[in-house]
Amino acid sequence: MKRILLILVLLCTTMAYTQEKTFEKEVSKISKRIEMITKQQKDSLKQKVIEIDKKLEKGEITKTTADTLKKEVAAYHARRIEKLVGEQERLLQLLVQDKTNGKIASVEENKKDVFEDEDKVFSIGNKIFRFNISEEDKDENEKRRKNRWERKNKYQRSTTTQFVFAMGINNVLVDNDISSLNNSNYQVGRSRFYELGWTWKTRLNNKPSQFYLKYGVSFLWNNLRLEGNQVHVKNGDMTEIQTFANLLSESRLRHVQMNFPMHLEWDLSKNRVYNDGRVRDRTNKSVRFGLGGFVGFKLGTRQYLEYRDNNNVSVEEVQYDNYNMNVFNYGISTYIGYKDVSFYAKYDLNPLFKNTEIRNISLGVRLDLN
Image (cartoon, rainbow, N blue to C red):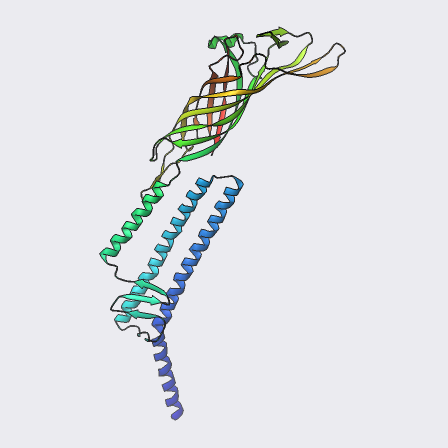
């Protein structure tokens, strides 16, 4: 009989102790979940920042872009922490309500985790959670969210960079007459140009818009291949086209120049709108149209000749001269396209050769890669 009574006493004591510990255990679980949520979000943020820094080191993005991306991912994970921790706080509120209704035993006063009903403050270790948020607290939270939105909107990116590559056919007009192409001395299909450059694209307005100023620097290789068995010959201040003594397999005049283009661009890409109302530019995602011009100077001119001499020996000859070409050049250019690809046209306003009315014209395809 004594053994049975002892077992009943131990069982009742264990049940009472278990009930007494229920509130503390539930609080501990929620506390661990809050710590885990915070740690996971911070670790994820850290990994994303490392990836952004790697892209910056490789030159895939600019420092301005990297700073903007870091701010965006930091804001995203801050919102995630606020949301997920908020859910755990609501569970704490339900737990507190159960304790108030007597469904869960009170926590001992000498424990580290305490609940102060008068102040409606719940403490877990050195972490404090406040319930029943007042209207003043709500106003303060809304004010902080508004300030964050204004800071993000203020420092959003207004300038982007693009790598430019263009290629196409090259020829000349005489006296600005387009019909002179029908009698051109140069081959239409084999006279080509190549252009490599770097541009900056700056929004014209402080707020997101569709109008930009695009400017940069590029290097241009212009090739002009003569029809028939002809070559360029420098004769004093004039450059003439004359028939060559041997049969030519190649007769090409190449001039390299450095240009500084500038265009006004209308980009119809739809801007991105975030859930918090922020609007951010999105470029090179739709139809684009650019109109402007360029100024530059020539870096060098060469004439390449390939033929067989009188002894039937194959000869490759490179002639170095400026061939009376104008050193400084300027002109107009335009492009229209979709996303990164566009149709490109440019025309020199100053003559190609001195003492002539011959001007260079180029048509081709252009890539603007963000």
